[in-house]
Amino acid sequence: MENISTRMKSNIFFRRIVQYTVIVLGCVIYAVGFQFFMYPNNIVSGGIVGVAMIFNELLPVPVGVTTIILNIPLFVIAWRYFGLDFLISSLVGMALSSAFVDLFAMFKIVLTNDPMLASIIGGVIKGVGLGVIYYVGSTTGGVDIVAKMLRMKNPHLNLGTILLLIDAAIIIAYAVILNKYESAMYSVITMFVVSKVIDLALYGIDNSCICYIISEKSSDISHEIISGHMHRGVTILEGRGAYSGKEKQVIMCVIKRQQIAEIRRIIRNLDENAFFIVSDAKNVFGNGFENIRENN
Image (cartoon, rainbow, N blue to C red):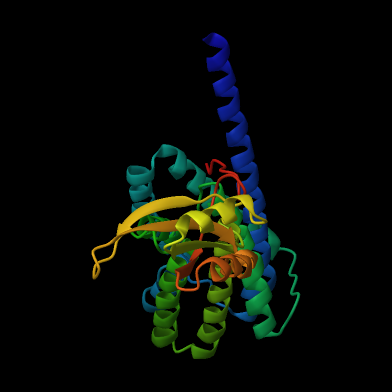
């Protein structure tokens, strides 16, 4: 028992080392995207900083002070809903991302003066940085915490989409209040790119599909899917036609997108009257697909 306990503690310690190493890496990438692309081209980052910039125009309060004040209740909420580990990792993420932004500002590097190019490239780099931070269960504070809470309440929405909606609202308010519409337009482009890259980092390029097949020859179709060239698993669901009242078997099968043509060929050869439904499937884990990995 003592050896098992020691091994568990060692595994937890190793996971924490990996987690905070990834957070540091993500903060460096985030700072590169912001400081070398977005900031020199006056592209608003959105989030709490965007809110602080609005307050700064309306009240004589420094942006940094406003950012800290606005983050305090959010971190209290984070501690209450997500626990101490999440609070600490998010505090580290916020501190390191701010520190690296200030550090890189000393180099006075401007990689492009084209706002459109800066919006796209800066958005990609910033999205990669935030994506890897979110992947290990942390944030950089601010609206990231709000987005994570909304994601918990609305699990059907991707985190990147939620962040895009929040940041878009902040950027629109920034443009209207400060009368900086052109800068806001480029910022919207950046936020769109950031949200897509975050979703890509978190969920990957999942090209899986889920198929439902209703057929009088469900046994033959199932056998061909399992034993033929596809070698895919099949689940049989019991169903009943609402109009006819007849008992029916519904085949459920998860396949790769490139296998749609093959499964259509199987159905066409065995039962041309079959009812066939295909829809996208995200985050498919298990035999033949992605392995289940713990996300700290």
